[in-house]
Image 1 (cartoon, one colour):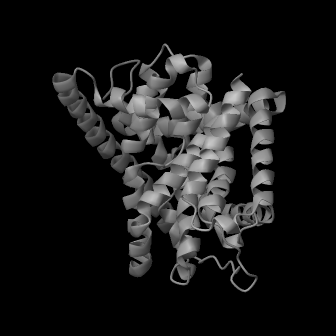
Image 2 (image 1 turned 90 degrees about the vertical axis):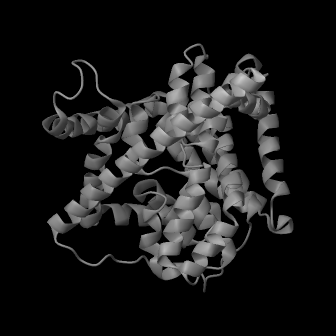
Length: 392
C-alpha cells in the first residue's frame, strides 16, 4: 500500500511541476527517468544495504571527529559558560561551522575541492542532459553554499539568459552547504542528512527539467570557473574563519527572530481561534505529507513541521521535529529528508542579494522569479522525501 501511495505522490509532484512549466512541449523525459531511477537506486543503497550503512557511518564519523576538534576551540574560548554536562545550541551546533568553514577553505586553497567539483559536475552533465555550468553549479552549491557559489561563476552570470539563471539558482536553493552539514547531524539522524544530500542533487535537475526545460548548445556550454585572486595561506584561512563565524551569527539571529515570531503568531491564533498557526499550516500540508508516505494519523503533525521549514528555515523545523517524540521512525525519516535543503522564503532574498552583488540586472531577474524558485525547490524536497519513503 505504501508503494501505491508514494507512486501517487510522485505523480502529484510531477503534475505540480508540469502546471508551472514554461515549456511543456520541450520536456525531455528520458533524462528524467534516468535520474529518477538513479535516485531510487541510491536511496536503496544508502538506506537498505550494508554498503550504504558503511558509507553513512564513515561520513558521520568524519563529522563527529570534526565536531570534537571544533569543540576544543569552542571550549578554549567559552569554557565554563555552559553548565556542566550541558551546552547551549549556539556553542554546540552553530559555532563548529567556523572550524568546518576553515577546512573547506584549506581544501579550496590546495585545489582539491575544485577538481572534485569539476569532475562530478562533468559526470552529472552526461546524465542530466543539461549544461556543464549547471552541473558544476549544483555540486559547488553543496560545498560552498547558496550565496558563495555564485562568486565562482561570476564571469558567466552577466551572460546567462533567464532560463539558465533559474536552474543555477534552483540548484543553490535545493541543496545545503557542507559547512553546516555537521550542525544538521547533531539534530537529526546522519543517514537522513547524507541521503537528502545525494537525492537533492538529482532532484534539483528533475524538477528544473520540468518547470524550466531547455537545451544548451555546444557553443553555450562553456565552463569557465573564476579563479580567485591568489591570497597567502593565512589570508585565506582568516577569511574563511570569519565567513564561518558570520554564517553562525546569521543563523543564530534568524533562529532568535523566527522562533520568537512563530511563538507570538501561535499565541495570537490560539487566543483568537483556539488553534495555533502551525496547526493550521499542518492541515494545509497534511495531504502532501500523506502522499509522500507519512501515515495519515501523523500527517498533520508532519505537515506542520514541513510548513515551519518553509516559512522560517530548516534549523527551526529540525528543532520542532526534535520536540515531536511520538512520531514513528518512518515519519521522522521522511520529514528529516524533506528538511535538509535551503528551500524557504528567506533564501529568496539571500540568493537574489548574492547575485545582485555581482550583477545588478541579473539580481533583479532572480528576484522576479523568486516565488517560482521557492516553489520548485520545495517540490525537490518533496521528491527526495518521497523517494526515501520507499525504503523506510
